[in-house]
Every structure is written in structure tokens, then in C-alpha cells.
Image 1 (cartoon, rainbow, N blue to C red):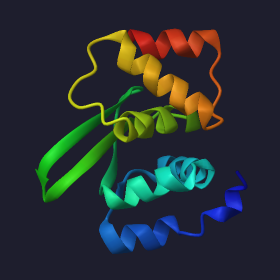
Image 2 (cartoon, rainbow, N blue to C red):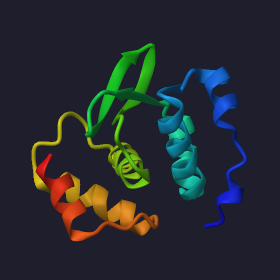
Image 3 (tube, rainbow, N blue to C red):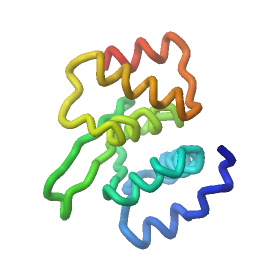
Length: 132
């Protein structure tokens, strides 16, 4: 998919919904990922009130919230991330994985979908994701 198909602006999105509560570096990575995602996934992000926040960690996680301030997917990203991690966490939301991922199967499902979207992983990345 051509990354020019996504015409939204991260800065415009921030003004509209305060969707991004992350450092500029992380915000730029999120923007790059969103540009590469299929249209139905970008629509899911908008329709399901996906929120992105950053914490001082190297991991990411996705949480479904029923009451912030309306139902949303809270995508928590570490400060040391790359496009693959962002796409992986968006995949968890898109697959509607709820709560802490305590088994390898949801990680593999998210990895497979992320790979389908064109974010490739090496074997060491797969091991890292599955060990979280």
C-alpha cells in the first residue's frame, strides 16, 4: 500500500481527539505505521477510539477500556519502540484481544497479522514478542 493514501495529520488528530499522549519521536513512528496500514485498520483506529500513550519501558501492551471517557483501546507503547512494535500492538486491538496476554497464541496471531500488513520480524523479534 502506498503510504500517501493516508491523508490525516498526526497534529490534526491530536487537536481533534487528544489521541496521542506520546513524545514526538514515538508520535512520528505511530504516524508512519498508520500510513502503511490497510484502510479497514485505519478506520478501526478511528471508529474504536484507539488512544496511544507512552511509558518509560521497552514493551508495549494493548488494553480495552470501557470507561475512558468512552470505550476505547488504549495502546501503551514503551519509549524504545519501532514500527513493528506499534503495528503489533494495533494488531492486538484489531483482533480484539482483551486483557493481559498470558499465552503465546494471541502474540502469534498479532505477529501473523502484523506480518501480513508488511511489518516483517526476524526470529529474535518473534522470540522477544512471545516472551512478553
